[in-house]
Image (cartoon, rainbow, N blue to C red; front, side, top):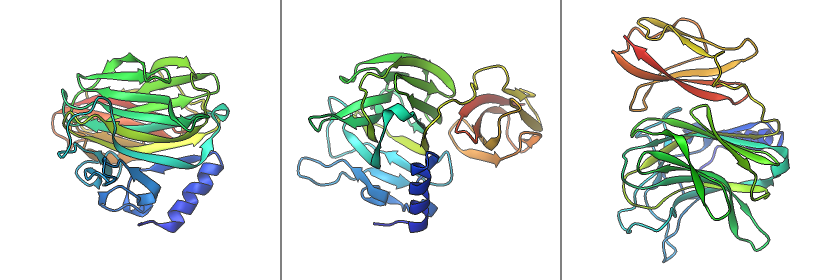
Length: 307
């Protein structure tokens, strides 16, 4: 098992203190290229013979934050499955009390449509020691998102849609009475907290119909979930279209953690903490995405045209 002990201790302390934990699968967090199983206590799916499947890996093929990401890859040695079962899971050191409020966001990129469904689920454990969904989002193969709404994995579709090879930011907020789902900063649905279970961990699974997904930049924390609503008019990108420089206008009370510019295949081209006069003169003509992360954990993505 490979780990950076100081980093792990720091993350554990910050998690207990109701701050944030950030998992970006980087070397400085104790991750190495290769199978994710047993790296920082992650568990990868076993086959029927009890062997760990092979294509659930830390990779440097794509990343939305840093150099590495988790590849939830197709498993060539197996047929397609009735439901998502291939992938990896992370158990928390201690269950999260659902009454305290919990938020988790992550970036996902899926390589192709008309392949697998890729599902991210927060889970609890009931009185019968069964893993039960607390909340979850699926990137469905036809270009839609589905939002889990009960313990039987029934779901509603979101209004948002997705395109291959583009990073998407998804956020789930669990409060005592309700669950909120966000896609690229937009609130997609609010539902009752159907399970009323503490959160024991999360998993990232697919049903092996083909193609791959990449996960990165997982940010989670407990406590007050109130964050600025980035869907409102206070947040602006100007000018847009832009030629040499672009600026991000935010409400005055918002402190920026990071601003990143990505191309349409998910490559990070610019990373800065400045909101004014971000130089884009070296970028080619076309469409780009600006992701803004604030110090309260709020994340949104805006489209920008470079002329």
